[in-house]
Length: 243
Image 1 (spheres, one colour):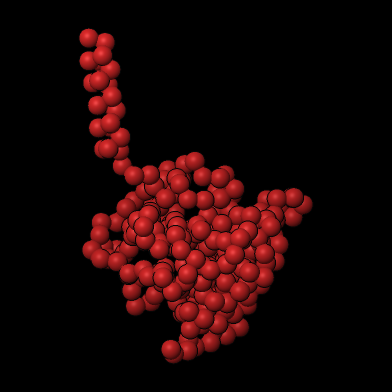
Image 2: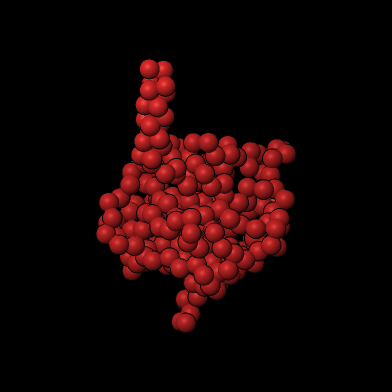
């Protein structure tokens, strides 16, 4: 009888394991860089970008090159690009990261064709250890998904995996990306098919992730709307080149 009960329990455990949903990328992927993006409040084609590294030892020069590469892929040279060490908890705090700020035209497509996730992923791929980027968090402030918005893409055997969640309270669409290749040319991301928008706050999806990520999320949400951005955008938005 005891053996029968143990056998039943083993079968039940096996069935439960098979039926368990796969873990969210927000739970399993630790990002090296957090990107916060929002449209220019003045109504131009520019999007205001802030990038923060999780690791304080992340090379500032590398982050600068990656931002410049993103601009190149989007045919829009970053304007007002500033890269340097920044405190995340106050001027006198010892906890710092590398931060970059700039404006780039249409990271968020104005024609409704998505959020250029492919270009973002390609810009950060291909760098050697110890600053290899295998995980990215990308937040689009003031954006909500439509039925054609990509919310899930790729598996373990694909060059890239992507998961998106929508936080209705903060009107923020957040993506977690896992780069399974460091060859940018192998990364291809579709703009998405017909889907049902997911409304799941990131603080639920991201349980178990390094607490530093959430400090950066909070700080970025405030800093991304700073006056410096308005000034750099007002100074003149260059037209996006073709090609």
